[in-house]
Length: 558
Image 1 (cartoon, rainbow, N blue to C red):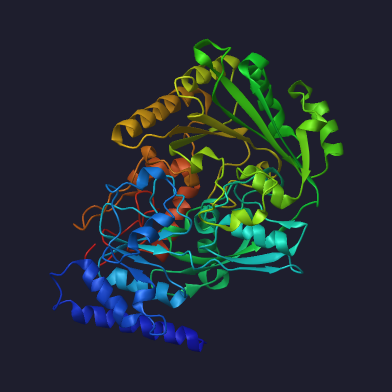
Image 2 (image 1 turned 30 degrees about the horizontal axis):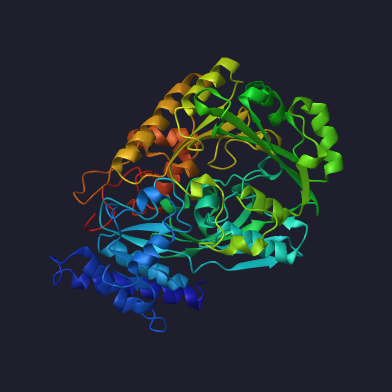
């Protein structure tokens, strides 16, 4: 039996479709955004009004709202395509209206949570589009007794972390490191974090969700079905609808954790340490994460004034007295001392990995644009990223070739971020979620180019370098496919057609497989089948969205 709310939703949907169809003859030659705005003005709930949630380039606050969550400096320039309309809903009914008005008037929707998409796909497009910005959906509700939480898809992970920490000293959630990343995109792509070896990905710990589909229906896990629930936990939610909230299974951690960061240059045996790390880190106790960041640094004593430094960064779910014997037994060559280690709370460990001093107030992670800036380079510079998975240890000679390429960059302007697998990650089946990169991988290695200078010349120079490094990595990483990770999106891997209005530019399964198999391996086929079922006209799409098998057009104009 339908509830009164569901009946009202159906009536609203029918009303929007009928009213938009009745306008076709009158407005067939007007720009689609004008018809879209007219549709919104007719159907958005009167209690909020269009002016409080809809912004066009004519509004004084349009640019500040657009740029407030553009996290990649590459996409802040005036030459970047900008949306015709930004919608900032407060209620799910406003999202329903936005979807249906966009469908009926040939407007693409780009869904933005935190704005960290590596290629800017949550707020850029080559065709007329609307940004649906979910930052008002940021509520976090904790149930301590049940060890669960509901979090709005527009919240950032710092807000989630802080809210959990204010509720309990021993509850936590295994998500990412950068506090300003939005949970909507992070969780729907998988969600790596410092506790992945103990608890897996963020997506592995999601137990329910709310999504609004292409027909404007509001669905939870039960009503969407297990296929769609599987797809949105690692397959990218924006291919299937608008996720408004996630229900999380919280995890239990000790009151005391231990962190350390130990740096070694190649003159201090870094190459040999990194080489041996490959055999140790994936096999350590699952309570330990020992990752590495590697890059060029200034050094007056080195040839050329630069050297390579490897920083070994770690968190241990326990006290220092238990950590030191484990390290002495497994990796004595690293030489970690008691004075290198600091005992912290879980929220302080989040500060550490988020690029903050553990001395600052944890509340800093709740701000989308914090006054105290993170030291993470990705938050400070222009960047281009690529990712690989390593399944066999790399030789010392292989690493030395990487160092040579890194030394082509200015100090601190190139980086390898290396995160070990093992633990929980090797226990979960590669088909459990769309994210397939589980057992068989020793570690992932993210390759980053940073630069400070604006403009196309500087950008192309650094992006070319990143491609050269990526080419060099080929013999050392996974093959058939050469795997990558959706949340480290890379359009160099392949793109869909823009589908810009001629009705003939749909993306074939074969074309999308070029990038899809790299992100999802054999899970890509199932994702396409689910997409075809829930969004057959391929309304929710972007340059790397899951395609529908049998549609060339998603609306009367597209």
